Image (cartoon, rainbow over all chains, first blue to last red; front, side):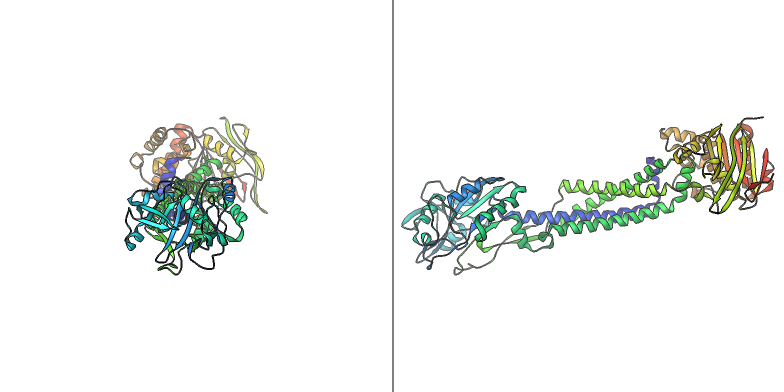
Length: 416
Length: 221
């Protein structure tokens, strides 16, 4: 392959070169942006779980007591036995499990949504330790509480106040802006897990519908190996049956409803179509170019170029064109990704994952996690786009070159 | 008598039922200038193609320096042409995207050689063709005579044993044609390059050592 000749050919036939490069680069840009968008929706759907340090949440729905008074479980989160939790911890791919107990506490003047949390655990609502806006975080084994900052403002609760639940007093040691930190399992009062377990175990209404011991929980947060998430979710569904609410990035993705979010197959099909169209454009343009050069190739063969010399020259031209198209397509894709990264996406959080009594103000409101769509082009996708372009170039050039190199110089060089 | 460097023995070429070259035998001696003349369509260009390995004969054999090249592969024929033959065409057939010196160096492109060396060899030939000032010009910027001189330089770049010229003055005015013929005669006389030239112009044929007349695919004299 003669590089000088290659560059001369591409430079002087720049209209054709630009047409081929433009056609393929648009296809590559579409491939890059479609896959980046798909990836971005996946990452966005993971965000509500990630911010609470988990990949999967597990709840079990069940019956509610006849009367909503005293301490009860929401219908979406009833007892998960300690033995079941141990079993989950033993599942392959599970890297950590966080436990919590979510309670509705109805008092004559006030209703509380109480969440018992493991302060030391990074998986689950323990991450709220970073959301304390006043006072300090909870200490394990102490009868103390954190209050949601907005709720505290609304009811004039301050650090140092006492809150009585089931005849026990809890000192308010801090205020936490939980709504900013997470949208899952948001409460207005946070207790150490042990305290919430004790309250639940001592609650007659709870025991009447969902027997509970102080080792049990009703919310689980699971950190897992990414590639094992679907497998673990399937195992959990098998373990808990129809009454399970298993939230995974995929289940949240489905709630988004976007075409990109709905199906990997759509992204794959759209990418394939984009590439196919791009390849056809590139192939047609290059085929036209090579057909116009029949005589030129006849001359090359007449003066001593072998078929292999001819093919290698054409492959070189094609690969360089497609490489440039790949780089251009990638740059276009990155620019488009940057533009799209300003787009907002709102992920609906199912009521079951952050249950609020419907009869309370805003109790039935849909909660959304809103964030900028994290569109970016990973280097693996960029490298794939470039490699794909070069492969397309090689195959196109090779195919067309092999075909044209078979011409007989005598047939194309005869004078008119 | 000089040595025979190229010979075609009982060469025939058929396209379907049409036989355009009929059992023709030709020998080219070292340094010989042969003109192949005849009416249009009599088979002269086909014979030239058969002898130069651009076309395969239906029957007969071609020998270069005694070696039979008839059964050589396409790539072997290409290498044979690169090492032994030079071509000059009526329509010049320069590569439009290459400059004059690059066109001259075209046969050297597949050979491992530095660009400077290629350029030096092309420059030397272009100087001999009095085209040193046109080295960087594209064919579109050259006159017909200049294009043909570039084509001659290209044909000479590999020091060929034989030059095949197919109507080399056919697309040129008479003055330019005479100049091109002057160059060919000069190559023949001073450098001893054998030339096999196809022409239909009787005047041009007079300069040749030997005249071969063709009619209806056969040599008539």
